[in-house]
Length: 353
Picture 1 (cartoon, rainbow, N blue to C red):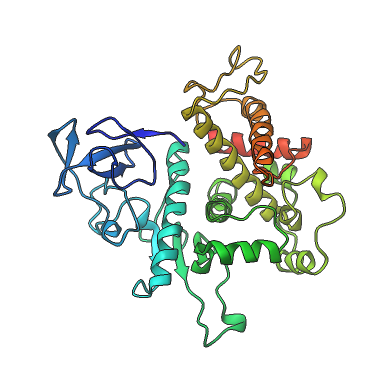
Picture 2 (tube, helix red, strand yellow):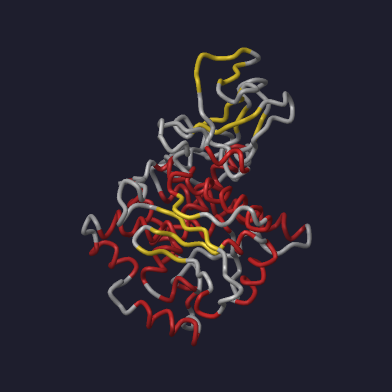
């Protein structure tokens, strides 16, 4: 994503920062204007290069717990920012491990919410729509129960459940290896699960089934049987030729979700590359004569999916080569086949519409 600057001293700051290391000001993110501002000692006024501005602000209620660095931009009477308003259940934070995992989870959630705001996708809370609004339940396993009572990450009619054990790097890596996944991150979880919500909002609720089925297949195929088959037999041979991941091959719903999440990966990583002035020189044809990622390539508003792909492929080659030079595995362990690119085009058009 973008780099930000402290409104008090103009030092470069990052999305996850809650304090400026140069001037010592408290930092907060304003979702309404997508910028980072410095606050005075009371945390109620914006600092503008040493001067207290007239604007009165309110930090999110979760700021005191280290779980949020956003402001309450919409005057919500709960005291929560637009990201935290979607929380339905959080874990028992008196348990230190829960608190630490929850803080990591909230950071990843805000990264996902940032993209939703940049794309201007519709956002409805469970308070506004208790049956279909977007909500999050962050739950912990009960070791005394175990078995079928263990918390599984998933989505149901806008309600996204996440096992907070995923906030532990060690636990998440163990699950990644056990499931044979090349890539497993908290941000990836959020992008995947929220994709199911947006399938409901952008496809189902708009009766746009035909266009989606022509790209991903018929989602009316038995979902539970498809997942049982996937976990018992694995993906079909040659899945790499048609799907972005092995899991995407399990069912059209999962193919949509995996591709939707991957589109977010591409757009936000290109936005980050642009913020740091990374150059890839792809052939962009009609969009612009030449792309040099020097704060001129707005991936979030790019009208052409082709321009995004042409910018993305050389960038991934570069970052994978850098990783290899450090003796590390590829940062981007994916292949964009022609069928996958066609699916990304569909997601691009769906979001832009």
